[in-house]
Image (cartoon, rainbow, N blue to C red; front, side):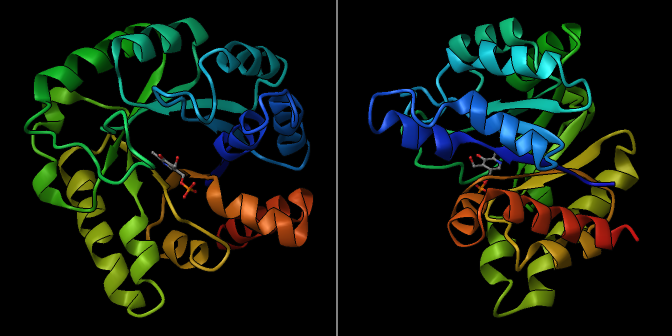
Length: 247
Ligand code: PXP
């Protein structure tokens, strides 16, 4: 069944906006776990406006007591990022080609341009028993060299799907099916994650159409839904969508 990993970056943003420890990120993670999340995702950016590198150790320590909950750290593999991820030893690292000033992740890797870089970084993480996922756009053209790069998973960047979903539902899913079919056929050992702009409205159709998604990571919409429904009800609504698909 698809796992729900909650991206807690926006809670950290709220905390940082006051320069205090309120809300406390670990308390938020504990609540997410209590309400049923299967994982915690963070995306420490170079300016640390969301999750800070110093948060990684505390989250890792919390999850040591919860072996069923996966820790996923996303980000651009700068020297600092690599060092901090190796120290934190999450279950999974998701590599994203973000420039330092990015507001949010907005494209996947060009595997042709970054073949050697990705291959070496991925090997380093895998040597340390950290599963590696790479963020990819819904375009086969960007996926050359996967046989050399050898990620364990790819995370499908779902912005395009989410933004076309309302007006052209069937069209919006097509490029994702193409990419998934291409990878399944040529690299059957690679698994799939998905994320970005997934929400209560569009998650069901995506998971129905693209089966075998191992993990969705969702942040922005969960915060907004929590304003309307509260965190507990919100998480349960997402979990119900996932569960109903697997019935
Ligand atoms: N995946 C990646 C690589 C991201 O950068 C983000 C946003 O930080 C997400 C998933 C989650 O996107 P959203 O906040 O829109 O749910």
